[in-house]
Amino acid sequence: MTKDPITIVLADDHHIVRQGVRALLESEPGFTVIGEASDGLKAVNLVFTLKPRILLADLMMPGLNGLEVTRQAGKVSPQTRVIILSMYLNEPYVIEALQNGAFGYVLKECNVSDLIHAIREVASGRHYLSPPLSERAIEVYLEKARDGTLDPYDTLTSREKEVLQLAVEGLGNADIAVRLFISPRTAETHRANMMRKLHLHTQTDLIKYALKKGLLPTEDIRKSS
Image 1: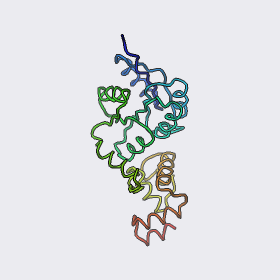
Image 2: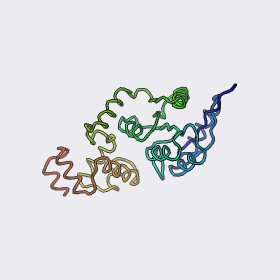
Image 3: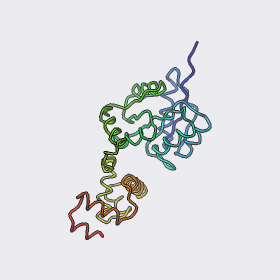
Image 4: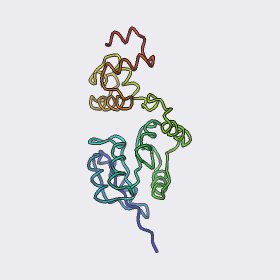
């Protein structure tokens, strides 16, 4: 008696990436790709409609990012398990993905065999993290988050910390984008994520936070206020 296939929905805003991943997965016995989405909103809708066993979602997508997609997918289809596919080797991203309900976090630079192994592990109800991510380190972060001892600053990614530093210096999203060689929209997204994680609402809140954390000398804070 043959096992039911592992049904998969792919979510990535790059068509060529979806094509490549689909071709690889469909060549694997027992895998069936039943849908594709080019943005986060479409991904959530597909999960609601198709109820796949696995949602393989890019971390950074228009509409909704992979972290928000993970959270909403868990609501509309609790039986669907999410694997985040990402180019970012940042433990804060992994922690937030797991907190939002993801079962796996796979780096885009991984081997095909690693991705296949990740899907089989997650489909079986186990978590999977791409090497060299440390499962024990992630557990420590999650334990701290649960008991309230995790500093919100430690949940920021390295990019978000860079944006924080530049924002405190008084740079707007356009200037931050130029400085970091990213698009203004990406700068805006990083800034919004940073402010949300730190529970800040205004530029004044940000400056007070930076002063309290000792991120900038007092005289520099005064110049940016």
